[in-house]
Length: 104
Image 1: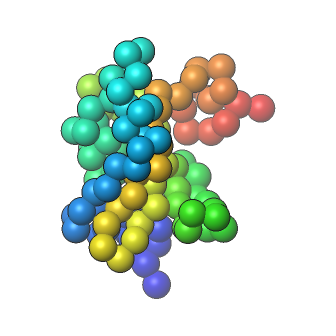
Image 2: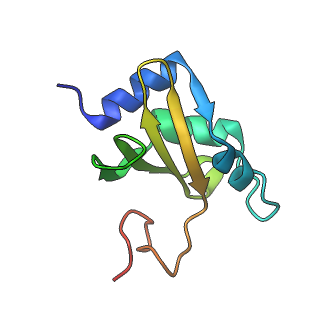
């Protein structure tokens, strides 16, 4: 059985669908997260959290630092596409210094 990360990358190679919430978050002036950044996180990033029981379907949180800044992407693989649920720049007060663990 494939891992969630393998499923994400398989689905991303088929098609990436940006849900409205993700598009809204990417376009916020203080963020301006590009499609290229999201694709880099999805294709090369690390799995930070796995949400097998998510009401939207099995999803996960990925992280990478394209262009030198950390970017988090929540996504859910489907048979025909990868759904990008949201993406954001993690808040340093809510995450560990490497942005891979939630702060205590």
